[in-house]
Length: 429
Ligand SMILES: Cc1cc2nc3c(=O)[nH]c(=O)nc-3n(C[C@H](O)[C@H](O)[C@H](O)COP(=O)(O)OP(=O)(O)OC[C@H]3O[C@@H](n4cnc5c(N)ncnc54)[C@H](O)[C@@H]3O)c2cc1C
Image (cartoon, rainbow, N blue to C red):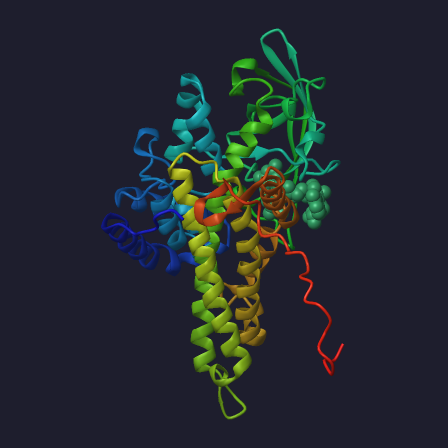
């Protein structure tokens, strides 16, 4: 296990973040939820206040224009920010921009960083990540069909994507395309920066998700790329690295999501407990019913388990570990806990839980999507079980306390039956 202490510095940061949430975010949620021109102007105004408070872009370090202090510090902070669906946008650490920024920071050339990363982290522009296609399984990106063919010093991109979140109004996207169809499956694709205004980029529609179309940042777009020409210099990393970079991008991105979900779970939990104590039925508060007490106890234990899994994965990333198993484990586990905790909170609220008078209905829709985006539950279970079983196949054991595989006896095998001789007379068979 990694060390998971909250340092005095992080504790102080959380006090400041909580204050900003109380003053700037919660009182404005209803106005932001309208997603109109006024809401857009309000986002700008609130962002300026977060910047002035020194908490802007906490996912990335000062060398890239943020205020980040590593993954563990961000986990503690992002749990608070994640309590509101709008706060990540206001603190400048929203998906998918945060993940794109990390990749450009890690792998971008000097020119890419100046041109794309700097304005992205500054909050002057937004971006999207365009990998999933309607025609093939998004869980298995080795089957992607979008192509980028090299013509001179340019790529010419043709393809069809969907669920490119935030593409409406974004300045650029990172598009995953097949650049070498004859290479082995994991070396076929590249990630290419595509300015949204390039001729041939067509946003077909913003796809309504559980009835919500969204606007700008909150959209999920279907996009056609037809003869889209961009310089080869827009390749992120080397050609053929697309799959490897996707793993790099999505790993930390998944942990960012889980940090936010912790905030959502915690807020739903607090709403559930508060309402259970207040609402009277059958001669007493709902909190006196054992079913509700079980929901409170289960939720408390599950939320804390998610928090510890998240902090452990974050600490590993800070130590330079890819933490693939830890990230996949917490991604599928926390998505389910988020869903279950919000579901219980809705149930305790009765019909009120489905209205827009509490944040629960919105949380519920988001929680359902969480089990799919950045890889469905089943794929993350597959990643965990494959890696764990591979260790055993190789004569090792997988021990989470040691942080993964270690040489060992290969697990405890069942002992052969012991011959104890004939049973004494009168012993039941
Ligand atoms: C709200 C939202 C936002 C998104 N944002 C983005 C984005 O910004 N950019 C982007 O590129 N994509 C985005 N996505 C797409 C998302 O990443 C894909 O939906 C996801 O990877 C699954 O791909 P798929 O939808 O094609 O499902 P498929 O791959 O077709 O899978 C369908 C189902 O098959 C099952 N399945 C798949 N593999 C296995 C397995 N190995 N074992 C058992 N069962 C399996 C799972 O139950 C899965 O749900 C977003 C999705 C949502 C819902």
